[in-house]
Length: 156
Image (cartoon, rainbow, N blue to C red):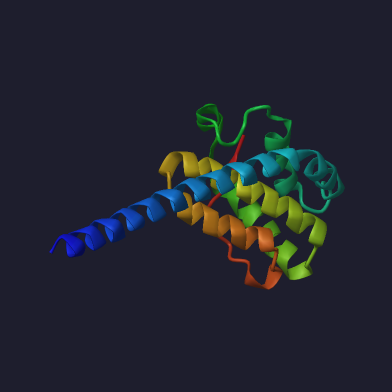
């Protein structure tokens, strides 16, 4: 009987430590990914200037993030962002579809960077760590054929 209790306690503690460790690792990966995303601003800023004429709506919303010194994973960013509505949202969706259709790699990288910034901000609102992590991985892979136009638009 004592052996059975020992086995049950060992199994239970193993499961608890596994879940806790997995959570910590995912949180660490999100933090590292956020840091890399923040550091990519210099590269994306140059690419954003190159797409200014062809994709003006994407250029405008991305430029707001690029010029900001507020980190996307800080609570302060929530005060400075809001959803895009109306004509601007329609223009942005049309440009996203055009980017995917034309397979414009440079514009796609800017779009992915912008969308990931929005997902980081959305993470602050919802605290859905896994949903954002899965979406970020899908965007980072950069498969243009698998792109889905989601309703996550924000700007500074």
